[in-house]
Image 1 (cartoon, rainbow, N blue to C red):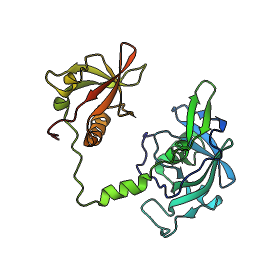
Image 2 (cartoon, rainbow, N blue to C red):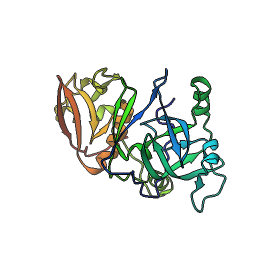
Image 3 (tube, rainbow, N blue to C red):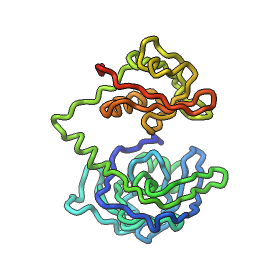
Image 4 (cartoon, rainbow, N blue to C red):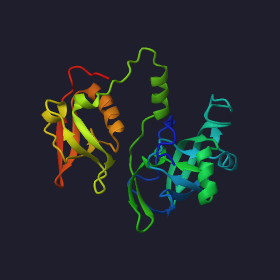
Length: 270
């Protein structure tokens, strides 16, 4: 399944976990595809089998759950939308092994990818994503097939609102990420097997990367604390972050974690 299935999520309410600092041990099932299946209660109904996807920016539930759990559409939204017969909705409560979040946004639709997974791997009725797991400090133990959830006080951004604002902002200037020669990094297409970062294969002379003292063999982990796992993601994030000035690169060099500051280029050429 594509890691990022959709790029929309709705957060019009402050989502409060049950008790700040309270810890829960939640079981999970590791499927043969590597996906994680969990069982959650929606509005007290269930439990329902869902994929727990840390790369999904929203919760996605089937129409079956929407009907059985009596999930209400967002006020002012029609019953028919681009996202299916119900579209955007609010879940009164979502519970996973005692870890509860209230007023959880979700999309209600029967996604074809979820149906394909369900036909191949057994029952799957949707996805649990960012609006839920962002409210917890998580530790995933694959050996025990268990997730440790500690409630926090983080309030996620309204990703749907931000996305729609960008789509309809007429005077918005397109992001122009730096091209590879300008930045001066030649990267491996494969991530490092131990650190899961981007391996620097070469640094071009006179480039921004050379000025930042990056060298061949460095493993790039994050940009301004945003994890990167592909060259395309790296340059997209750089294009976004350079609007704020210099960026901080976290790298691994010979087993040691280092931070390198890269100054914003004078001219940003797409």
